[in-house]
Length: 385
Length: 85
Image (cartoon, rainbow over all chains, first blue to last red; front, side, top):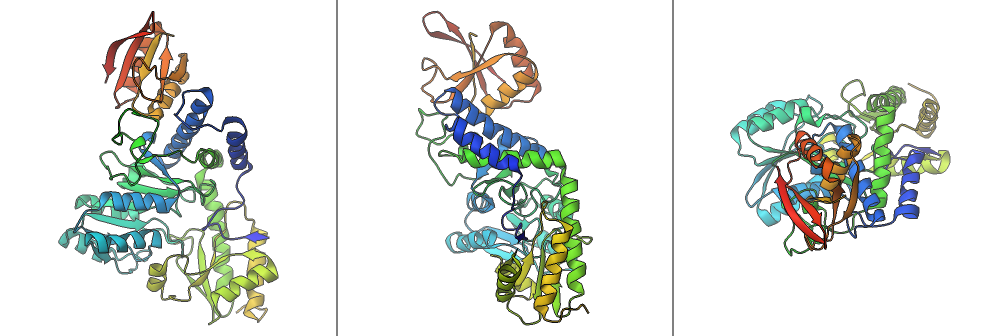
């Protein structure tokens, strides 16, 4: 089996991830920070070390301002529902996932938000001239952009976008679902107000893990209230972080695995992982460009692209191509709209979508060559252009 | 260990423990004594002679959360010492 669906969930995981999950289940088992016994302390240390590892990986100054959630969707919901207020005007990008668009559309109905979507432009799909004009002329309260597109691998020019937002006092939320663990991230340099991430993709963690990094002074309203193991005498939610947003027994097993995944990246080196994955994507780009009838979407890895490669083949259904790759060649991909209809509208591939190939750290060059051969065979010609 | 350090969040307790371990200062994580608070969380205990060193360490590390220090007296009584920062 060749697994090329790492943009959905990375697989396989480093062996340390399963080992950490199993160690928690077999040897610790308790609720972190509650009860006061040694197992509760050990569970608390798992959460602490995972936060500390993430802070190191993202160069984020305060691990205590990293809030855990169940995935990037949970983190984005907390950021958007927790920060936006009645009548706010919001700016978002042309390649957003439904984890951004659906909360925004809901809040458009309940809070009367005005939502502006930046048109596509030449700078990695971002029209920066329009961005400069709109942020100058319009009164935005918040802007939310994905860091890396889950459809095309396009890296947003955050180094140009975020200073503009800061200059105009606009809150910035970055959807890092695809960038965390796949791209070197320096939050002290980028300075987004909120950076949302998931654990189960580039960070090699188990599903059900993720979170957000809240910059000093950014205080969204909590979405979930309840027990935290702290200030138990009070019926009011604690105001301090991370407890304010982490009510209920956390996913300590998953967070143990996430911590192990983050440590794996720190051990190998983010740059090395990114270079390997981009190298595989470059082979895919080159190979696909030679197959007659194939159209590739998004930038090449050399031009602000990460290891996510979307393509169509003549007028063939992406679902049919994906099915054949699976059944005839044991190659696992993701087809369709990738929960990002907005991005596919921007690319002109709505409503049928694309076939998405997303290699990861554990894929080898020979596997990528085998994938290209399989696509050539499906193209029916057995030969290149 | 008769000095108790109380923090708002278990995260702060872990961070303080980590700092002390790095500085080779012995600490012990314990339940918050009921005589001090009805909180169901945990706190950090240390030796009297390490108290000043720990206070300095926490200040240097930029601990912005309030930390309350107590001394355990005979008969399970606790005397409030100070709050930092």
